[in-house]
Image (cartoon, rainbow over all chains, first blue to last red):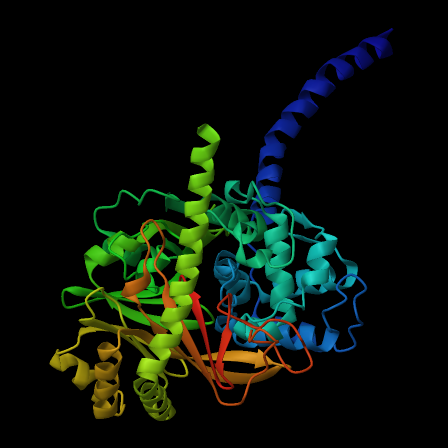
Length: 312
Length: 202
């Protein structure tokens, strides 16, 4: 009887006590788990180069029949050694994918390499929160794209861009979701601003603060101040009107929509003008523009920062 | 009555399409014939200056008064805009050790024939890197209402090219596939010069 009462007390107090203990411990434990699993991966160029050296015996993939293993490895190595040389190809719609590649190639080259090698060998792979299983048409096309300048001889870049375009879909891809030959130049490969930011968050687990849109410019009084503040602490990607930035329009009526992504590397005042240095098309460009011109061409600004322990 | 009206509309459409095709073709042939000497001089002058310093130059306004000059170095590309008579232009050319006089003469020649842009483009044939000179001209004459801007593009190659029976540029002798430059199909003017009509000038 005494034992029975004792057991009853134990039972009565044991579960609430355990619940209290668990409740007190759990948030901390969960916070710890969240802290580490939610941290952006950071690796170095040296680690990535050491890793790729061990993969010299890479066999021809049965999934990517037109991507030769030696050319594939050479291309990956070049991207790790010279991350700014990544080129999206002429007349393609791959600029969004090329711009976001700046992040893994500079901050997590090993993560990028592991993904590329797994995707090549197994035909599927996980990157961040995304499981990639490219379509057969895309697997056939990688390595065969031609008349795109240097992209012609970069099969790994073709594979990377095609896999990204095949996997991520935005509203601009609504009418053309299935890859057909030549679609790298069409809406199939297009990247709207929302899709661009979503890709960065999901693939690389970065914090992205975005202002602007696909049609309306961001409501920022001083674009120079806004950009120069953010570039000090993070990566800044710009969604710009390419017709104004590069392809000057000789007609009197101009179509004012953004079509191109660049990574802003530097911005400074030069007299009453602004010198912007940005990365696109496999190289750095320095251009002197007026404040009004800068405001006119920028439709979207993505301020990208890694998630780390301090950030929590 | 209703169907008769439709027939007339279709007929007018066909006639206007034929006229526009003919006028474009005539324009390209005539334009090249009339300006062949100037175009060849522009191409050879550009190639010579390019050997000293990689660059591209073009007019970026409707009235051909402002130029965009791109100077390419190993690490960075500089883009500047100048009014053609500005002293800053010559100063910048000298600063980058470019042949200022030759480039000023090139700009003058380009302006005289409404040449919008000149650049050197790299392309790959059998995995070998090659280059061509890309010239675009702004033919204000043949613009139809409600149509987008069109440019007359000329490409100059170092070696003779391969063409099909209709004079369309092919990828190579072995690969009987059409070669595209900036997404456009090109046609033969002679063995080393091709043309196309394009919506973009570069």
